Image (cartoon, rainbow, N blue to C red; front, side, top):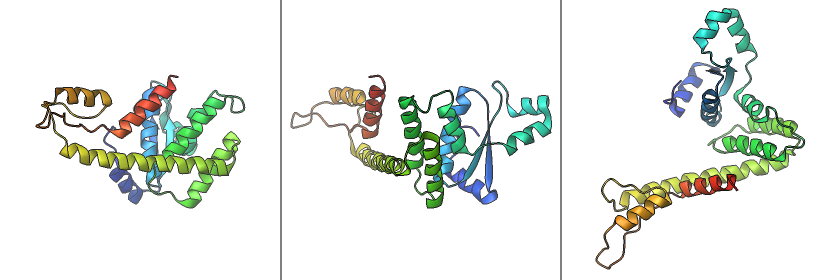
Length: 220
């Protein structure tokens, strides 16, 4: 698929077929790409199935070594994308005692769902029921978590829109651009004082601030 796959491509695929199969290499890069693609398909309410090949093999290698029948068998047992994500998140962890891993898994899945602009209510209930059975968490609590994630996604979208508008009207110094707090401090120091002796204020991306805070929390 490459990095060019976007929401418009997913909409086009939905018009052509009811199910889409994503064939992944079995390495870490393939797993990361699966999560990126998953968000696109969840947002579009599209049915995505995921096939993970043995590590080090691509589809051509697999077909050459194992043949068409073996590949078709992978198609038949391919889990849907959310189930694949759950299997990846919960592989090798104790769902009863590893509270941190369980919390991280729930946070990740509800975060993906929260980014969807629209989600079929029946599909949402079915997903929450699946999460409830997997982790032993009440559906009401999971729904509260999902609503929190949706609010967070809306805040980030609003912040991004405001930052985009602020950047259009912000003074620029050469090739420097506003973004992180470090960039903003550098830009402010480089800007010459105005007529009133004050430095120009350079906007800081609030979503980047949130990401830096979250990243800092992970290392505490």
